[in-house]
Length: 211
Image (cartoon, rainbow, N blue to C red; front, side):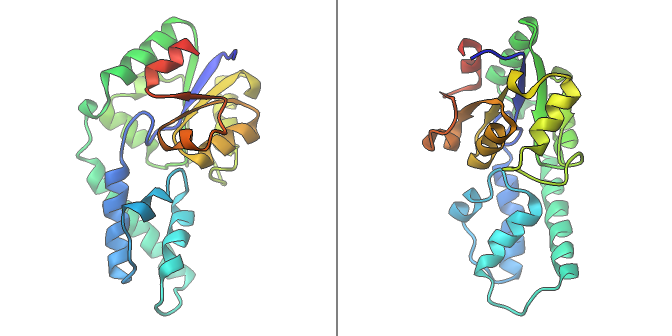
C-alpha cells in the first residue's frame, strides 16, 4: 500500500465523542417518547445529523413532524451536543494519537481530517489537535455525507493530492464505503473492522506506521 497523504475521520478515530452524541440524541428521543439506547446510537456512526434524526424517527409513533419542527430538533440536538463538548480538553487525545501524527509528519506525509461533523473545528480547538493537520474537510464544506465520498475528495483537493495517493482511517462502515467510492486506500479501526471491506485493519492508530 503506497500513499502520500492520510485522511482521518475525527469521531471514533482521533477522539471519542460518542457519549456526548448519545446524551444529546437521548434527550431529543425522550422528548418524543422514542426508545433510544446505545445500540440505537451505534447506527448513527458516520452518519450526518439529518440522516441520524431520520433513523431515530423510525420508531416515532406521534403526530407527523413538519420540516420546521425537524429543523428545530436538529438545532436543539446540536446545541445540547456543543454544550457537552465544552468538557473536552487536550487530555481527551491519547499519546498514541499525538505521537503517530507527529511521526507521520516527520516521514513527509500530508495529513487531513475528513469528517461530516460541522463541529470539527471546535473539537480540534478544544483538544489542541488542529496543529497536526495540513487541511481540514468537514461538514461545512459538503452537501452530502458519508457514504458519499465528497468529504474525502474535498480533503484530497485541499491537500492537492490525487485520491489514489490517500489513505483513509475510519471506524464506521459508511466511512469505509466513502473511501472506496473515492478511489482511496482504506484502513479500518474499531467497529469497521468487522465488515472486512477495508484494505487493512488496525488495532490502534500507531499501526498506521507499519502499513
